[in-house]
Image (tube, rainbow, N blue to C red; front, side, top):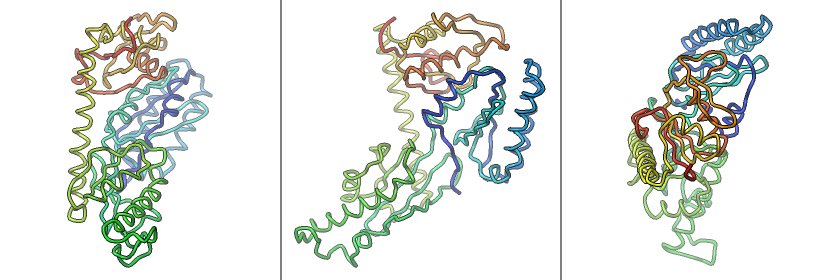
Length: 373
C-alpha cells in the first residue's frame, strides 16, 4: 500500500501562516491508511460539530456557520477521499474554502477556532517525516520502494523506468562494444551503466519533482558512484544501503531505511543542540519565551525549536514582540508559541517542531539567533 500523503510545501505553509480572518477553523485527527475511511469520517464530523459550536460562541453569524458546515459537508460526502488516508489529517477552513493535508505523522485530535490557523502541528510533518523512497539499483534490475513509519513497504510503479543496463541501451549484453569512441571492456561497461543511470534519473523526475522526501540509494560499486554522479534529485542522502539490493527483500530495505532516517534525525538534532550550546556563550541562544518572541519579531531567529505539544496562552505585540501572558486562550488571546513560530518562519528561520525532551532547557521554545540581541 502506498501512503497517500500531501506534505505541504513552504509556499502552502506561508499561505496558512499569513492568513488572517475571523472564523478560521483548524482541525486535526489521526487516521489509518488501512481503514475504509468510516471511522475518520465520524471523527471528522464530531470535530466539525465542535467547531460549529465554537463559531457560534465566538459570535459568528448563522450564515457564516452554515457556509462552514457546507464546506465540511462537501468533504464529508467525498467517499473516495476518505478511502485514501495517511496517518493524520489536517483541515483548514474558512467561510469560503477548505483545504486538507494527509500527513505521515501521527497527530492527536484537536479543533481550534480563531482569526488564524493553528499550524504548528503541521510543521511536524516537515521536521521529521519518517518517509523515504529507496532506489534499489543493480545492473540487472531496478525498483523503487516507498517506506513509511507503520506500513509495509510498497513498490512504486515508475513510467519509463529502465529494467536493466542492457535494456536501457538497447543491447542484449553490456559486454557489447560501446557506441562512443569504440570503448570496450570494463570502460565500455561503465559507459553503459552511466547511460542506464541517466535513464533511471530521468524516469524518477516526475515522481520526485517538487518533493523533499529523502531518497536512499541501495546499490554496490561501481553503479553506486555512477548513479550519484548523474543524480539530479537534491534530497538523495549521502548514506546509502550497502550490499546487492537484488539479494534484499523490500522489508529488509525498509528496516535499513528506518535506521538511516532515525540516525539522520538524531544527528540533526544533536548538531543543533551542540550549536545552541556554542551560541549560548556568544549571547546568540535563547530559551526564555518572552526573549524568543522579541527575537522572532525582529527577524533575529536563525533556528527555532518549538514543542509540538506546548500551550502558552497570551499575546505578542506586533511591533515590539512584548509578551502578555494569559491564564487561558480566548477570542483575542492565542498561543504565544504559535505566534513565535509564525514570525520565525516568515523571516526564513529554520523551524523544527519537536518533542519537549529535544529542546535545550526543556521549555516550550529555544532559538539560535543570527546575531546577539
